[in-house]
Amino acid sequence: GQQLNQSPQSMFIQEGEDVSMNCTSSSIFNTWLWYKQDPGEGPVLLIALYKAGELTSNGRLTAQFGITRKDSFLNISASIPSDVGIYFCAGRLNNFNKFYFGSGTKLNVKP
Amino acid sequence: EAGVTQFPSHSVIEKGQTVTLRCDPISGHDNLYWYRRVMGKEIKFLLHFVKESKQDESGMPNNRFLAERTGGTYSTLKVQPAELEDSGVYFCASSLSGAVQFFGPGTRLTVL
Image (cartoon, rainbow over all chains, first blue to last red; front, side, top):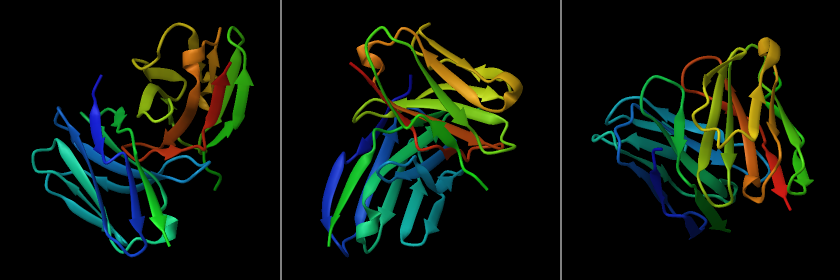
């Protein structure tokens, strides 16, 4: 099956710092999604990207669909303690609803 | 509106036993998905229902896993007999159409 390489695996940052994480794939995807999982909860969709080069923001979060269609980035600006959680990228090869997920980036924010 | 619910939230069983997980999707969502996350790894697709039909079951690990969605509402995922490597968090998700899937809180399965 498809493999998504998500990095970094974990991050320890100070409150107020900016954060970047990314996903890369060996295949071309037509959709990229970014999810956040809080402890004890299921992943919640943050941002959906449907077009190469697309840059979309959701509050302090910004995600981009890479122009090669093989990667995506998520940036969080001015992090706060409630940003703590696991962030997952997910990509779709075609128009069927099968998504491939990365292994997650665990974010820790120190107040 | 209620979100996706899953039952139980945790299950601890012994190797060789049977476990059945249940998922209630958001009302009206025809698409229902099962995923599994083994500790520290990716969330892996298991299968996709459209109403009561299996659209894609390419991610099911082996024939010890059986998923059903009779009547096109809730779904069950049965593991029989369970093996140690089946431990992980099983997520269910549902969608109306398109890419946006809403996830349940997951069932943490531990096989001893």
